[in-house]
Length: 144
Image (cartoon, rainbow, N blue to C red):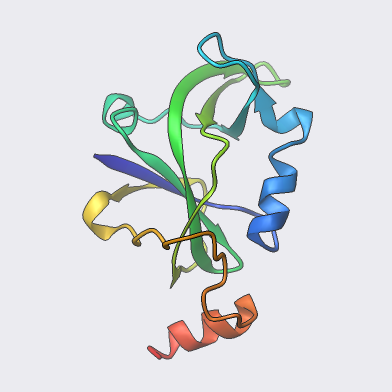
């Protein structure tokens, strides 16, 4: 199984991400689902589409930490407003918190192998330590 990882630019928390994914610009209808699905707009089309659709997820980096994932349900091409080709990554509406892991900034998206992906958190706790994200990030960077 193969995954993607992408920065959630401008997102401050998992709650903020959840609210942003409800905005009409960030959803698309799909014939296999009753409600519109969250969507990520990106320029590049993944060459390993089939591996991603075989149970892969999109992991999100928020404020320098990998904090969650969403299962990838479909990947489609689209025409952007400027007439160029783009890609839509349709996701499950369920945001699954993962063990926070520090991640340096990068552009676009990257492939993430399953063995390198953080493990899911159990339960619904989004910040297991109760510490602010900035402090969690600092502690992770220090290896604590």
